[in-house]
Image (cartoon, rainbow, N blue to C red; front, side, top):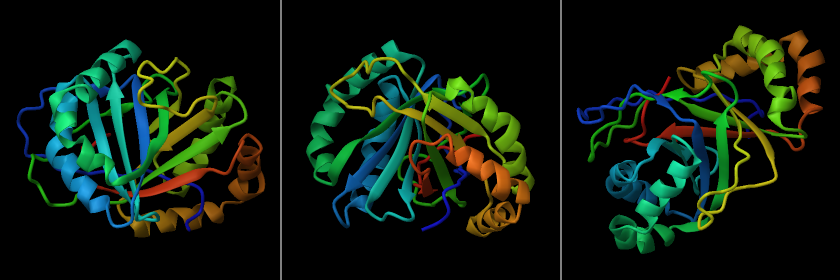
Length: 264
């Protein structure tokens, strides 16, 4: 297992000319979804998802931000989707999950899954902290975009708004950047009531998630080595971070599927 710090990298190339919204900011509300699958079923779900679900999900009123393979967990599928607000989320999810596409393919999708309830409902931790989406490859694309995708999830003792976001920006970000990371987006728990209770989300938790970018796993390892050699990090900031956590940080080492969007 790798150390519990991370970054996110994604450089998908698109051939689709139809997505006029691709460069718009996204999104005031996002879901980070982790699905535990039956052994050997991940490629089956990815093929189904990229072929049958991506475009209908967006047509229903949401943004499919990215979808991934987890390098450390071969039976895990991770993806993110975004919404303009919570009422829109309820409407969009209802349109898809009560619509014809999900009805036609839900049995095949559900047959790959052991659990799909590990879902974090999030909002940008500060102004400008969300994603600005790029484009996506067309249906039928098979080329895997290069790069390593890593997401770090902090479970906090208190809401991130009670000082953790400021702590991250003023104290952690400079050391992470000095060691070679470039945090690009940060999110915290969206505390609003789940507007689509048919799909559970994790509730009663204080979450902070940050994303950054590296060229490849080698660059990521160099960053981790540099951070471990940073005396300010090892003697001061790591302990200060751990004191704010309710549980060890979770790190997701991911690679995008062929139709995963780019973002910046």
